Length: 482
Ligand SMILES: *Cc1c(COP(=O)(O)O)cnc(C)c1O
Image (tube, rainbow, N blue to C red; front, side, top):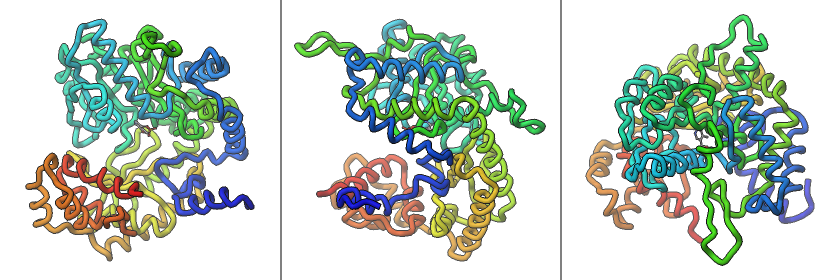
């Protein structure tokens, strides 16, 4: 309860958001469920709110904190150097930038390529666009949704600056064959990045729990995925995911500091202060760094091993439970703590299931069909979901949601609309055509989205991706009209 009207206003705004605690929001947010951790993180964040990580000579505390965090991470995941970043996207961007500079400076590559499984995170496409690399897209095995080493190998050329694998992929939660791809990359003299943004902290500590015998007798097999694998040259691991730290915290680890230096920016050719930036930021908030340091110190290796064990058990229980629900199926057995749930028969539309289950207080993230992947619901399992009662509740609510979704029937898209949309050229659309297209998808002039998202998602899914990429910023742009 607050009497400050501004804080009251903030609280009122927050009430319209998805909850960030309690485990019912199964994407975007991570809840350890541990008592007192939020208070510690908030106090650490506040203590460093004014500190500027831009100049590490003026604020030596940030060097100390970052070194501690990197040391903790390299002990877990191998590697010889690292950089603290603002999040997974920035870690991925910097991995690509570092590789581009390395290829340019050490191999003379001036038209670099980025070899990506089609399941790679969108952040790598953003990196390619920002930093001028050509994306070479490699299809995944339609049965496992993991990339095949031979396909990745065939995509490598003299211009390849970086090849990427996911441990696991965000959309499907499965592990790419890290060791095989990394070995081939090394043979060709190409750098190999492991995107362990979501899986690194969780799997690293789960592996420790397995080694300590905590998961016997049915311990999971965790394939080698980190910087101890020959050929892996960099790895991204987010702290604001399974290290349960406040937002704005990720690490990019490197095999050594010699590779890391290629991604740094230094500038002495201006009349201002000498610049050395290890990330894309200039002025750099130290609050997330201090909070990440405090949270990881408090939870500790043992604490994370226990959290990973809980999450592993809950993921397995959820996976088994989903397979028993008529009308749903798992796209793949989870390689980590993520589930991708697809419809098992055409009368069940997972987008409608998402709308229905949201009515029971759960947010499951809809993922439109792409390539070999059907439409799915994404579930990130965090420690707050990891008790039997919550798992049971979710499965029961999901089962009921499927029954209701079957009664409602799938969201349908007018084939004439799809045909008309297919004829549009995204590059030449005028304001009127944009407005008409959005109205057909149910998006009003104020950008407000309808209560039920299934019809909008169905339209989005039916459009060519390039047209969606033209329309999506228009939708969001309307929200920001003043
Ligand atoms: C979350 C995630 C990212 C991007 O991280 P952000 O912190 O959301 O910027 C990249 N790759 C994978 C596999 C992820 O799960």
